[in-house]
Each structure stands twice: as C-alpha cells, then as structure tokens.
Image 1 (tube, helix red, strand yellow):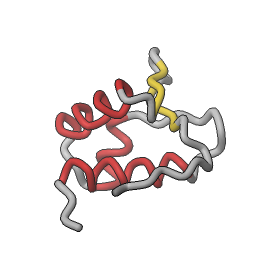
Image 2 (cartoon, one colour):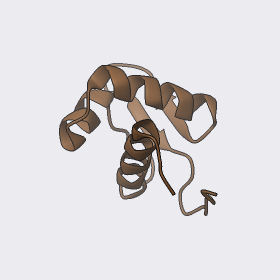
Image 3 (tube, helix red, strand yellow):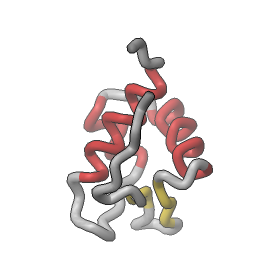
Length: 77
C-alpha cells in the first residue's frame, strides 16, 4: 500500500502523540522539529486531523495538540 507523504507525516505524529501522557499537548513547532517536517505543511495536516476528530487543539501560549484516539484501533484500509 502506497501512502501519500501527508498521511505518512500524520501517522508519525499520531504515534508520537499516543506515546505522550494523557492530557499532555505538543505544539506544531516542536513536532515539526522532531520529525524534520515543515511547520506549514504539518499545520495543514493537523487541521485535517482536527476536523476529522482525531486530535484536539488546545489554544493558548502553552497550547498545541493532543490525540483523542488513546488506545483505539484505527483501520487503515
């Protein structure tokens, strides 16, 4: 199965989010630095994930994103 680069970035980021303690948020800047991904592109990916109900955005200076799928199986195909 061939995945687009956007899907690949989303999966890498989601796996990272799943490893965080529940309630911990991470910003796009930090995620992009960890994975070597453009902040702009990753922001667009996370907008789609948020609209899809897969992540939740937390506003504010110490805001960011947190995963909503803690331990839930997501079929990919």
